[in-house]
Length: 147
Image (cartoon, rainbow, N blue to C red):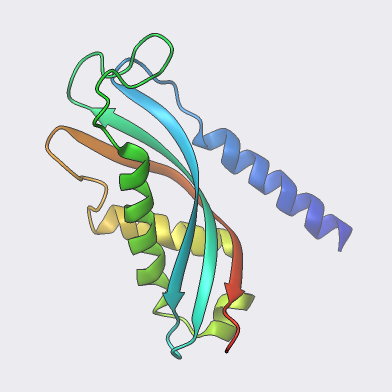
């Protein structure tokens, strides 16, 4: 059991290291935590918490100042990334029953969400900027309690 936990921790560290990218004045690496409520294949409601690593890229020059802050205040990349991830998580969850989701490897689940986002071109959000996901880590899957 300890070996499994150690290997799992090492794998998470490798994934996190691979998620970091060099940025410039037209792109930045971001991270956010997203809670998503969804319905499984068998009609049961659940919540997931995912940690998302993404790069916000713009075709505009100097989108960020030297401190890494947006120059244009009306860009809402973080909220847009949350909406995209929620859509991807819901699309993957609807393919599984609640029991299979609770037993599913969370790294594989996160990878399935990332693959879904890439395959559906959901990252190409507008003409002026794109969001590229480097990693999606599902941290917790919690079934909703019946009232």
